[in-house]
Length: 311
Image (cartoon, rainbow, N blue to C red; front, side, top):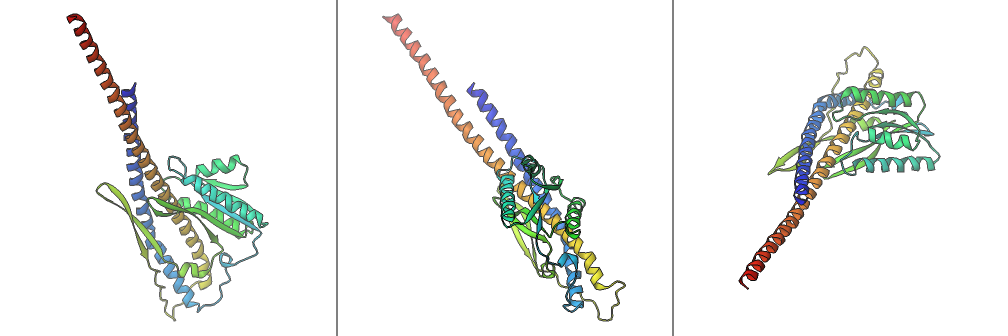
């Protein structure tokens, strides 16, 4: 029976190690996706900054930049579709519940847009006010981000909500991630023109994984000649660019959340593998002791029999 348990534990360790390596491969894919969106984000930031400079600091009367009295807030909560990733989903759900109660205590009405099966299952069972749901997947793309951002923007622009808050897991390292809250809309023009970015890269050395982070500076504003004539008013162009910026922010938080989930799964599977190895070691020790005791008993019986025959 002990030998069967040892075999079973070793097989489990092989499975958990394989799951860790699969998660690591997906983290690399997630980082490649982030890098692939950088040129578009930089160009958008550059054009926006150039238009703001061209308008000479003129006050921007645009719906997405307009602050209004907050009577209702929509929370967009991003969780995972699957488990086996430690406390990733539990931490995000707890953060969302705390923010929901905080807003309610201030007399603000709240509803939710849920991204990810784990969050959907949890909040649906507890009858939270849910506006719409989306699945996360392991490889978020622009099409998925567009569907989510359109729902959020329509909610804000129609006046159904006065603010949209994004709750996601910020990727810090392979062993740490932070549940975060940020206001998606409304926002200030400076949020687009003055905020830099950072990218992460998964590296491995001697079989150990680590993450290198790189801070990226703000994209330089594009220069438009003073004699350049725009077919459309620059204000209209900015108004068309802002939804693209929001879509980019949603896509980035989806990618960061997925990277955090995969990193949590890597750590969870590593811990499971370590525990399986330790258990196999203890079972081997127990098996060897039992075998040694059996051999000793047999030797004693043979010696006793020989002694009895001599007597």
